Length: 511
Image 1 (cartoon, one colour):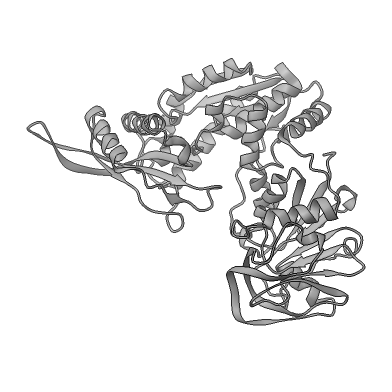
Image 2 (cartoon, rainbow, N blue to C red):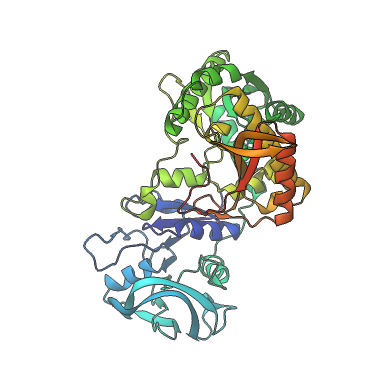
């Protein structure tokens, strides 16, 4: 990256990714690194931000970074734990707060003529989240702002370009948080706001050209946003040397295999469709355990993909649609809250027998940025707006064993639900939606006859990243119409229910 860069040191805060998102929204490139793995070459970074942390600076386990090459040498912004850290280890005093300082607060004092608070006025709402408080500022500390309960809400250190705040500017509740970050990064640190989707495309295409040269690359397309955007970027860089494989596992949505292939052809991509439905369904026969189903689908996919990849002579690279959250989660701070998140299947999940080098054009950008990059390259709006769809497909939405008849039923139900959301203008208000086929039959009446048929559950959630999700309050009229349409048109279903559980404690998928 040729742009001005920001280094964010992660101390395990649940908000660290949000800091990165806010910085990127200012069209400034940034990277997150664990506090104990500071990049050796700091010349690439023009400013540094220290994140919050679940730890107390007073505890023995407190994260303790080596800032010798940063403090006083680069503009530094310390957030929450970072602010307490600078105070605690530089002659100040951090003590337990009498009351846990959590939630909304308002700035009651701001130092006049201070660039750091440019265009931010007294009364501005900020978000606190800490149980310690800074009682005394560090050596050469100068008070910049207070709230009613927190005297030392913001300070700077004389003789350095170092600023510290006890609140979180990155969260939505800090109303002038983005302005504060801009004041620090643009006005104080002097960074240029040049990092845009177009600049990302240009620099990535150049990088791919020089990295790959005339080699052949294989990419598994899924029809989803990430693999599609990765495919178009690679296509821009290496053209026909990109060989895309789209596998039909027999568990896709209704007509999805044919529709997606058509869409890709229209985009000029070199795609081979492989219909392996029978192979997947026969491997799944009799399996009911969710984990066994997932593992079987993963194994068969690798077998099918490898068979096809072997047909591409002299392929040197495997491309993947890995995005930045996957990368961050797989190198998270030891012991931080994000450390409990499972390592992602895209990172390091390459089977031994595929001796290909890995190329991941999207590994440094977030999901919303992937969509913006896709839009800047002219990818169809409908494709970029697609809901996430699980890798194992409908297999984990059919509870119990999988049969071709159950797949047919669920495909029909899902099509009515998703098409209905689109026709009613509700699709874009939902992050992810789908239907689940339950392993129970229920009594019903059709005409004068008693029926004993399947139950389906509809699920629609809103979320930004899938980490947490709330069920969507779809209009009753829509649910009523959808339920009637499903029961009247899908043979084998006589009851429809709507799932009103949020994540946590429930997950988005049922299996």
